[in-house]
Image 1 (cartoon, rainbow, N blue to C red):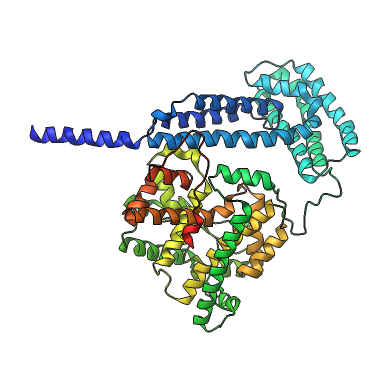
Image 2 (tube, rainbow, N blue to C red):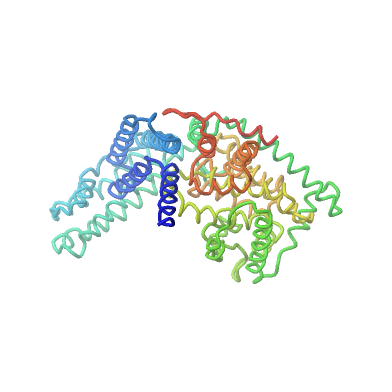
Length: 565
């Protein structure tokens, strides 16, 4: 009886603790994510008046729903989730409006195919089409496209970005049309008999039309600076708004200044390591020495495994964070394809580590650049970045703790945490040899350069080629690797703030660590708590850990960068 009573008391205490750690808004966050997914699945023609109107209403409805909540009655966990969800709604509406404005400038390119769009809408509920009439609609649209192209040829778009948007309008409709056509084709004999040939001709003509629009812009608009890398600068206003919604209270120029200060620190440390190697102040020669420490082909997986064991042992001996046994057991390895290495020249990670190293069919120079750029000393600080306690641990823990906060993903939390560990390991003497120091510094100065070139690109102050030159001349990259890095930054799905998030997120975590240690926390307590709170901007994590005042319309204000000076 005594044991049973004790068990009941413990369960009550645990239940009370669990309740305190949970948020009343957890289900609401999940609802928002599910609603967003459901609408995206339904309204599959993303460049259409229907899409923009529906999502504008979606964000307005959620703004109303958020306003009706009793903020004052929420726990600190709930208040944090409120601010995060409201910010998500605000951010979604802002960028939707930006895209809608751009759509409005080019919507006319698809004015003649409204009947085709009606067919796409009717298909969602399986309405049987009037196949003969639909075939004629397709036929008429095919013939109209030629006159449309002649008309647009006489009035080219002001710049290549506008032309690209016009092309996307047509491609978006073409994708929706293909989905609707395939729904009926082969299942409805009447539809198949009437519509097959007219659809094939229309589909071919839409491809021609989209390609034409994409290249129909003023000769004064420069699309390619000679690098072959085409990116879209978002401009100063959108950059400032993006920073505010990412809870970064600095202007682009202030961030660039901080990056330049960090860059200078790295360069001075590289010179010290260069002197240890006997190269004096010529850090580039010292870096060349380090690049040539690469392992033979076929031995890179074992080299990665050795580095993993070394970093995990270092962290665990100092009891810096809890690394669950299952996390150490379940990560895996993959090899990166040659095609993917053109965009990602260095290994990546998360649930697994994806190893970048030469393959048999690669050009000789590309093989050497890949091996030199992925030498063990360059990989020395980044295996833990990708695995434990970096990205792999993040994936592991966020799948098990406060997983509902998935929509609040942001690169400052994700990449910042992994970069933060590079700072911590450096400070604790992880690199022992000058080669290892140069390997760590190479990546740290690279992250500083990312801030500089990505912000200046989006401000219109640097071209892709100038970004490549910065990485080669001032960081020490192999040219092909620098080119791949810039291409990755501007031509993939990475958002504009992603590249600056590594160092800035790292500085945020470092500043928060210092504050929590000053309050009496241990490093392990801090690190374990971060991993159990889920994804969120670091400023909101700080408000949560320190129980700081929040309000419904909370705006970023934490000046974190001074803590690192």
